[in-house]
Length: 66
Picture 1 (cartoon, rainbow, N blue to C red):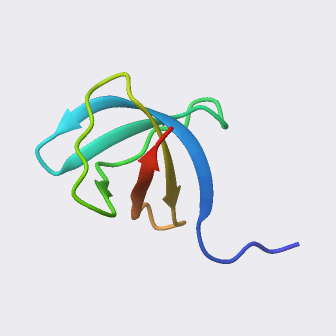
Picture 2: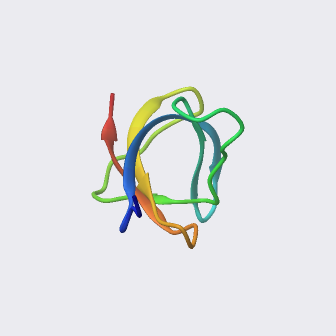
């Protein structure tokens, strides 16, 4: 079965970066995103847990906090 689009995952903000937030996946071991930004204007700090999506090309967005 091929999956198209992004998958929503649970993650934890591991770093606040000038270009967004680096997220460590709670659903898949060892997966760490490039810096991604939230959909809205929310801000997060390291350790916050979030729902996010990521596409195969590494782009994505944080949907909201958990």
